Length: 162
Image (cartoon, rainbow, N blue to C red; front, top):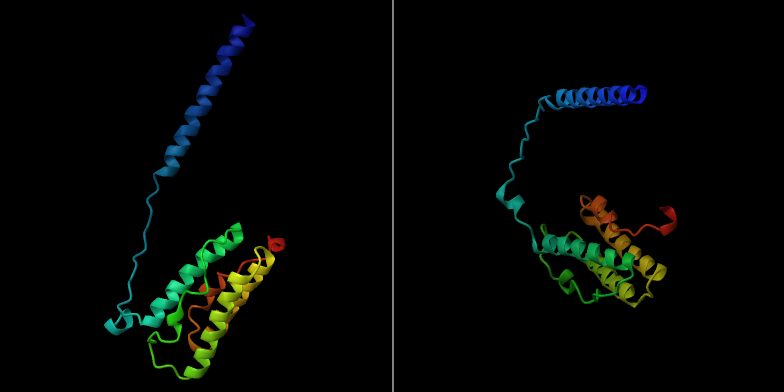
């Protein structure tokens, strides 16, 4: 008889516990959420259009992000060095102040892409890829600093720093 009483008492306590927890959960979910208004900046039409060079740079970033993932996973699927040959000829947003400097960065970038393809998988290829990213950062320090934080996301971190 004592065992049956303990079982019934245990069941009642358990049931009251679950009911009270359920009621607490319902109380906390009822709070309204205040949303802030988002104000969009209105851009002038000429600011919305991207130059050939800007579109090319976005493609370079996308391709480099894919390449980064391939290098990290050990794949070596896509040839990299033959991409973006139009870097020298793409029309810029504004006339380049120092075309010779830009072209020298473009030459180094293309050479570094060749080095990424030529490097052995593993640390040598990671280092070659990071050198390529450094070239992008260096060029952007001279011409257009805005994308530098995004470009730096391309760096492959050393495995020991994880």
